Amino acid sequence: MAAFPVEPGDEIMLVTDGGKMIRTPVEGIRFVSRASKGVRVFDTGEGEKVVSVEHIPDTGASENGNGDENSEAASPD
Image (cartoon, rainbow, N blue to C red; front, side):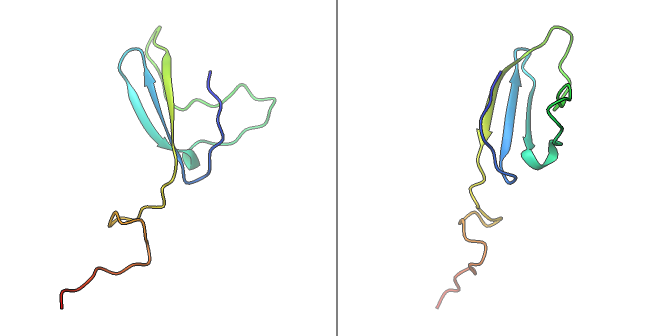
């Protein structure tokens, strides 16, 4: 079992003892009430168990990789 705080822009990565791995955005996991039986993030094989969960925080990096979504590419002078 693992528990840690996450934000909507974050992702989590789960790894099973059978070598399956999934990386999914937190926004893709539905929220349910306390009385529920839980939420299935992905199916594991017969007897397979999740052995690791990693929190991947939203770094705010944009598509161009410089972390500033509003910046423009510098033009050569």
